[in-house]
Length: 248
Image (cartoon, rainbow, N blue to C red; front, side, top):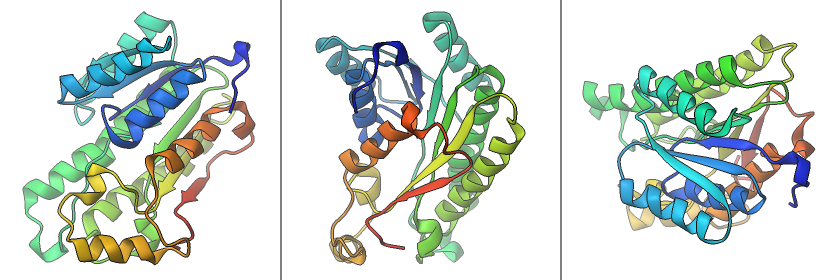
């Protein structure tokens, strides 16, 4: 999707050092947008994403912040505004996967998943709601496991179901500000996060589950995010777009 010269946006992507976030950052940078790559741990991976973007003439920088800590989210937004003058789009991509039956979950795992997937996304939404200007966009990453209700995905599904509810509520709360809030809900997608902790048999089963009989790719999801960022999506608000090959 080609972006007009007067439609360059400052886009903050959380959890963008690898996977869907990293690929989306590179795609949007090629459109001429200015990208801020948030990450929590891996300096090398984050810097590599920035280098790949700048090597082809794009504009990007990285900022390390643990979004489960509200003060670090505030620092992240401060950095973006001080560096680029504004924030136009937040892509709430950071998250962790937990594949474990509910009865086996320990307190630490529950707290970790909710701290990043729910609290981290909520902190970012809260800050974006305060700081985005007219015409801004908040795009949250949910998951199609909400509809699939798969065994072993209990706490992960709960965290993403909360994100979908918050998406619709925040969209209504931002009435009059011309800021849209939507969620993208990928189905099983071939990323490191997806493959982690799964058997070959389960991966094969999930790959066949959709009528299109394959896993999604980062390219598939990034293309939907590209549309969600663009002005072509301006009339879409408070919605969940399910990019899952028809799995539900």
